[in-house]
Length: 113
Length: 115
Image (cartoon, rainbow over all chains, first blue to last red; front, side, top):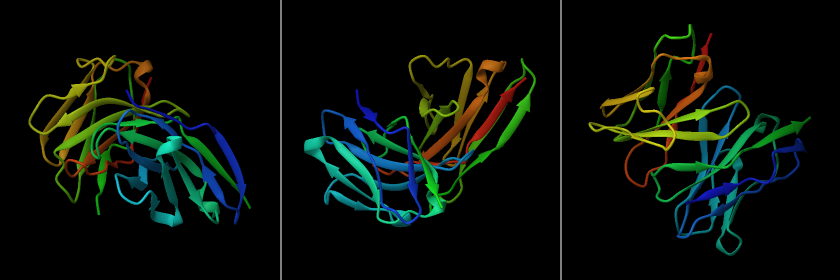
């Protein structure tokens, strides 16, 4: 069975600083990988996904993620964080693009002004 | 776009009552919808996968008689929490996908509080 690990429960960055959220997965075959963001009391918004092809994926809101098969990682990055980026971020893996998702435990991002 | 609407967003009810939550795909047809449960400050746990016109597939440990799922059309799935008790209080989120190998799009969730 697949699994996802997000090592950082909380991260605090200053506005304008760069951001990297870590995600490691475990799956025997080629994974389908996702990053979602959740604001308090709301559902999840898809930031980006990796299915195949170019391992550097661009998403919405200036986010990008890089799939590294050798490290079983799919880290999320943003060069300059905005205060509105404060939220909970979830990495997820699936056995197929639309199949059921297995989520990591999430990383709470706090942005200091 | 791919908009998923969930209703109600918040419900409070007495113990023993049944509560129905609706999940609608507003601008696309969804052959498959998913229901998740999220406890405070925790991740999402898949409860069941709902396919239009067929019975839902429940994850291990989820009581199918407790959480009734109906997916009667390509744009609507419902989750009914029967005889709800305080331990059923949680945040319930649905998602829908346009088709195979399409990502899931999530609703805004329903906060259920059982008194």
